[in-house]
Length: 314
Image (cartoon, rainbow, N blue to C red):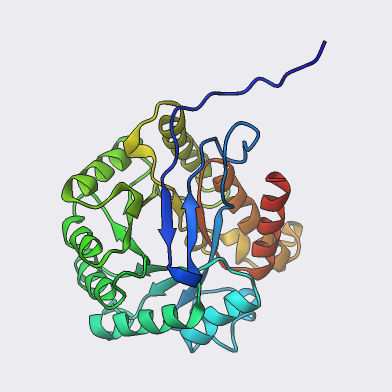
């Protein structure tokens, strides 16, 4: 008697989100099965691994991580190119920090110009996060969207109480938008409804349901993302069918397990290996729970994650 593997029947499909254009184009999402279940449905592309790049040299990174980028950390264009050419990034996640009055004096126009310079130099999709108070984020990202019109950059972020200005900009200049919600399926869905009612196409939205690193509440992230994917694929809920992005690197690299010295915690092992493992495991937890795009920092962790993804999708 032949054994047949039982298979789930899916009624829904994740939207295909176009990142970049022409030679830089990558499609995130598009799957019709749960993560890595390519024996049950179509998974047309691999998850997108974006490496973080900043507009200023980070002051709070561990030395062993910053060592990989010290030669380019003062120039975001060179930094982004190194991440692609040497470390095999699928995309760049560019963080604007100097727009925050506490960190610098960069204007909205200057921010838009530097984003454009990075985008034109890399030939890969670009994700942009603005790290400042929400009113500044709206002003800056509006200008960023305008000066990068039609390039399908992914703009971060909007929340339920400040989505209108940036959504209108994304609509007008034909870019994509990250919808951020606080680990709440209902809020994530409601924000998607508000954005689409405003006129932003559903296939121009990526959901960020929030994330946290290994050991710091990642089980809550896993649960929320799993419920979003189940609603999207098994219940054909159109307002949960947006691809998921996790800005996980920000969370991983601030925890004590990747920063405290071997002298303080000798039983924890080699510090750099600890950091690599912490990022790799955190990212894989999110990928198997449904993430389509993740941000990362350590080149060796990126290499490991890409190898695991290739093995799982064989």
